[in-house]
Amino acid sequence: MVIDKSGVVFNVLPNIDRKTGSLNELGTVESGFRQVRVLFSIVEFMEDNTRPAFQITEEDFGKSQIIAILSKNQLFDTRRPGDESVASLAKALSERLQGQEDEIIGVATRIIDARP
Image (cartoon, rainbow, N blue to C red; front, side, top):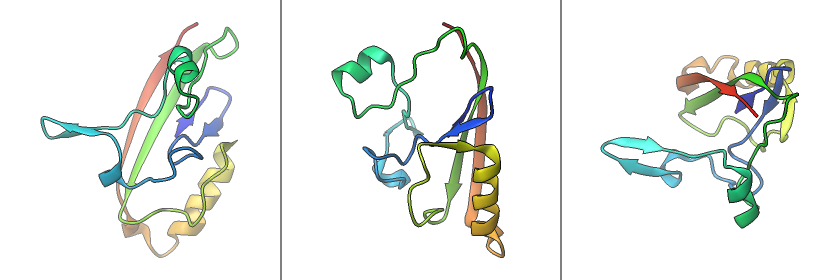
């Protein structure tokens, strides 16, 4: 997922065109590392509109956070909406994991600095 500077969460994987969230079915493995690309350039999107893309404008300028959650099983029974508030996602995660906190194997996060 991507959280932009306004606090909107964009759920990029799974999505309507990439329905799986199973790590075994995503990305490629090189030198023991699995790489899963989740965002593409506008040019790549124009070549294949199933690739999620963002175009950075002056309004979007700034830092965003990428978060990946690795869990033992699919976290949610249905796909999350394309975008939602941080509060909405936090509530859904809290409800889903109540009493099953060991479901999460790991969380990775990175900050990206978006520039137009």
